[in-house]
Amino acid sequence: MFFSGCFVLQGSKGSPIEWVSTHRYHHQFTDTKKDPHSPIQSLWFSHMGWMLDGRRRQFQKELGGLKNVEDLRKQPFYRFLLRTNLLHSIALGGVLIVVGGFPFLVWGVVRSLTR
Image 1 (cartoon, rainbow, N blue to C red):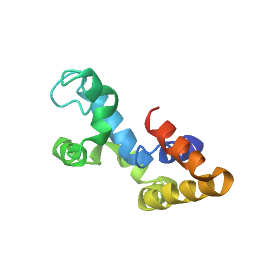
Image 2: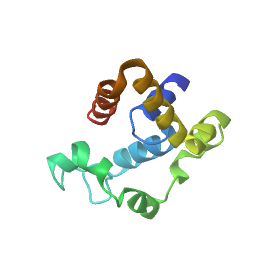
Image 3: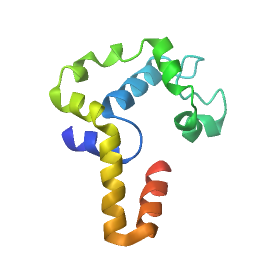
């Protein structure tokens, strides 16, 4: 579980707590207007568009915020990842630049966003 939490961070999907919350709302409201990434809006939106939508966090608040992940919010490790989400992305960028320069940075970011 802890390794998958770190991989979610590096995949530019937000913190594991936010990702799990969205995933649970998706399964609770599958293919309805309340589904955070429903194909009803479009195939593009259901696959990638929902992550780029600036209203994503507001929409999640309307559904109940992070109330559906209280089990994760009680765990110190996941709270730490939630608080330090941005730092992990910056650290990954630094490592990619040092190891392989700009091409690694672009590949690491583009690849993580398209998975």
